[in-house]
Length: 372
Ligand SMILES: [Zn+2]
Ligand SMILES: [Zn+2]
Image (cartoon, rainbow, N blue to C red; front, side):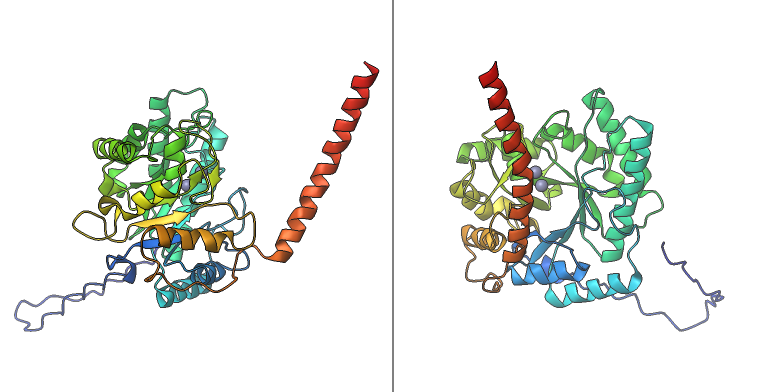
């Protein structure tokens, strides 16, 4: 809820010599100093502040978080207690982490035509915006959604309308909404850059932009793996969204080949995109964070899997290395990982529990085969 503005009733006397001091321009945040921003999606398990500490310990200078459980409608609180939000903002400032990107809940489908799901999605996205403002986030990334039986044109109109409804009566301040491109699985909208551009254009009044995911680009058929493919993709971005509207990139390698239309992230350099391509992307002057070719504060955030403890730290380190900034990178904490050995054990137990019924099913099937 925005605080009511108190405007004192003072009569202005033109004879008065007193001139109020102009409001000081707020100093730009540290992350807009022209340095490249690299980070990873960090966990808010326990508290929001834990995500900041994880980012610091992993050697990041930027981060992405969920502001609630990403796969539940009622995943935690709709509103964040003031004291928590304040402590979070203060600690983030201390650590000079930025930008802070929030990834919206996966259940939100802004393209939904079914009234109940649509209402729920708009409400949930509204809550995302409110939490984003409370946490002092710079960007809120959301997927366009799935169109179901609707045409892409219809879906794009629904999405833009849903975002506008959700943002009504929210004072966004410096929070910007970013529409993320998709891999194009099923009826997902936004795998073609034209579609993302169309949504962003309709949300111009809100100052919306786009977040481009390298794995999604590749799976959607944009060959960012080669030099010419990257140049062609730039031309496409220039002709649609405009690179200056893309302050955030999700950097993920892809498990699926070019044009595979499936969303499967892989460790940086270990997938079908490959290390060379990421080196080219991270060092490209047009994708940099410095003027005149780049965009101040531009961020590259990994959403790579954590299969083994340390994968998170290694992917962040890899990004700094490929960007040619290994020396300037914030120091990571030796051996730190968001995935601990203990968590790994319980994860294995879970998997074993799931495997057993499958084995039994296979045995039964084999028996039936022998009988038949
Ligand atoms: Zn992404
Ligand atoms: Zn993805």
